[in-house]
Amino acid sequence: MSLSAYQQALAGLTDHVRKKAEDARVVLPDQVSRNIADETALAIADFMSLLNQFVVRLASGEPPRRAWVEACRTHKRKGCTIHDADCPEILGRAKGLDDHAAAIARASRGDLTKEQARKLLLKYSGSVDLGGFETFLREAALGSYLVWATFDPADFRVNPFDRLPRTHHGICTALGLGHFTPSDILIVLVWGHADSGSPPLHRPTVADAEDYPYYRPRPEVDARWGLTEPLSPNPDKLSPQPEVVIPETTSRGLRLPFQVVHA
Image (cartoon, rainbow, N blue to C red; front, side):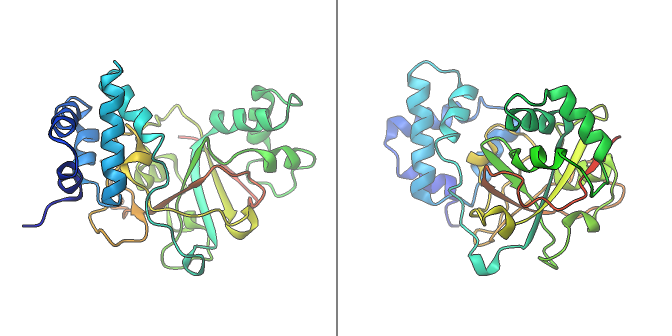
């Protein structure tokens, strides 16, 4: 039986570092610990580097969870890159309304408060005519530091949300967004990859997920992208959705209208 990527990475470490990494992994949250053991998308050299950085931070006195997150942040976007010719043309994501309102407020450089941006997002949901608000909207970052995105694997040119229920529960279930509760209002954003400057698309890894417990490593080593783990219960039997990570970028390629989704 061949060794897993995690086992291969451990085998490349010194005995001392290997033991420290193994001991610390098991005191992380259960799902995060399992994700590390099941990871397949990281090259062995990158996996070794991640584990070694984890141990170095532990040795400096950081608690295990914090040490893991900080080690992950130095190993972002190490999963394979999707070749330009194979990149989806249209990408999308769902995020918290308050989070995106804060991003717009930052992008406005003082012209809008977070609360003003939030009210405008609610006002213009479903509209293609945003007036002066569109300038601020397109300057806002799609995500903080890293953008998780999905697409339609059957047709790279269409809105990925067209194949999903346009409900709060359906979107969260399909995309594995277990950190949202019914009280969290969502915003659905869809953008053109080329119109956004064609930033590189990477298959996600456990380092990109940090300590997010709803991430699941895709078992297939050679897969070009990751897959979400639909939440339970899943009464509509929604399938896992493709997921990639990209560097932080603005919303200049945003396709209108955006949609605000309440529970």
